[in-house]
Image 1 (tube, rainbow, N blue to C red):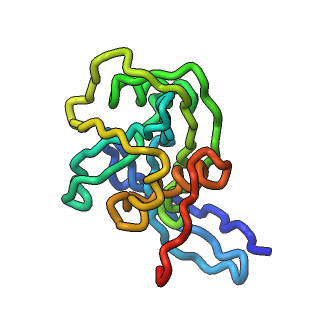
Image 2: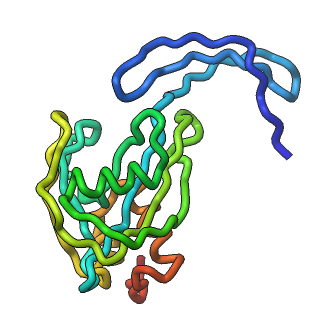
Length: 189
């Protein structure tokens, strides 16, 4: 069984509104040698698989600066300080889409990139979503609402139209729990 590496020292190299970068010096559990690592500390995140009463998946399209592209995603975002994941999920769904739901279920949690990130991303299912308000974007975001039939989601992933890794993970939780239909695989893929 793999053993934890023990902290020797650390230094915060950069602190921004969204994340901090830590330089770590840790001791190898195998031989006690020192090694340097860098970790991105970010708030935990939440994703929402939101379905309307007529089985439409609520999606958003938004520009992503890292990939310099528009991505198709489920609604989601960062937890505010002191906020629990379900409260954040309800807030993010309303802010990004104007939708709300009464029926919520936890689907799962992933570590977005445990090699270099310290945060987690929880996924919730919101059923019977309905439009209740206008969107309320942060000053750094602008989303375009998009509804897609639930039975077409797998095809959007297969085609690469949905390619955001933690969004694919969120939708996979929904497939595994039978919330979204898994369509037959495409031969040759």
